[in-house]
Image (cartoon, rainbow over all chains, first blue to last red; front, side, top):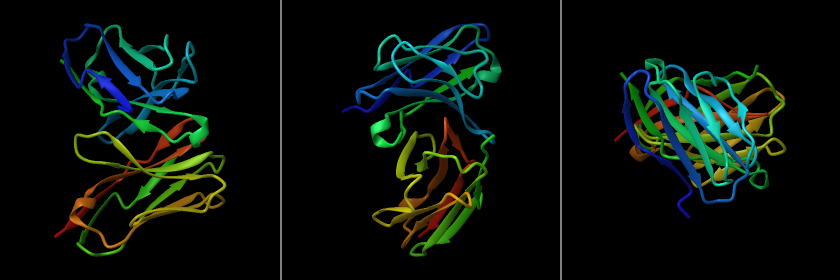
Length: 113
Length: 109
């Protein structure tokens, strides 16, 4: 099992550009999450999904959109990138049968200039 | 709103010491508490998961306890090694996972 994988690992964008971050998990987990990690702010939840076709807002959803068309994939989109979105983005997944233990991907380092 | 606090923010110890990391949370209505390790520039590795009905979990040299009524958890690391140097994060799961800011641990050889 690859666990949770994220694509790409690094990306540099110019202000106003758009991009999509892909998260994939091969553990058949129902729940998937997107977090961002910033120095001094810790990890904060952006959006999450409790199953295929569902999404919900987390703590800091503004400027991001998500989609979960397939159970194994969770996409995070930035429509018009801003320097404030420079961060490290982590995807995670979990399922109820394991007590909601969360498994994290390796992260995507995004810089917006 | 759930708030998670970790003390100390940083800790430096000589190799071989036993040490305790502390985590406190404000809302006791949680499903579980999870301890993670994060190495610089890397993702999060789950160390221990304690369900709300449990009091402690052990894995090798690590032992985590949970006192839900007082809103506290401790991570005990026995016989610390330089390879234990990392940031340790505590997170509580109610309807979402809320993280503490972490404790940066350095174990000196």
